[in-house]
Length: 81
Image (tube, rainbow, N blue to C red; front, top):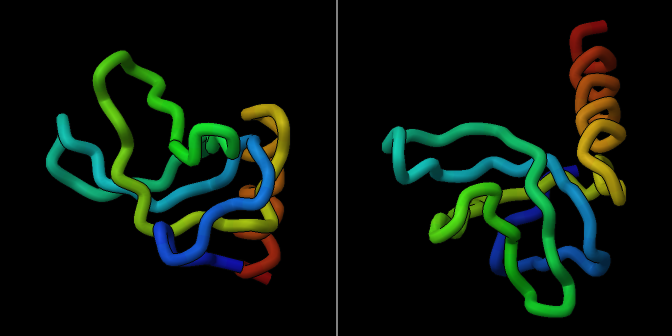
């Protein structure tokens, strides 16, 4: 289930599959990004680059990157069936 950000914010810290804008490539992409609930921010994977997240998928939440991606692939596989 996709949720609009910042209208809706994750309730837990962790990784979520997001739809975001990449400043360096001037385009939109999907990526698992960590949300820090204490600072209410998406954590950048590069110093000085705060991701501009538009949506996040709540059902992909996990404490770790790889399990978050596995949940995303499971969702995609179900959609293809």
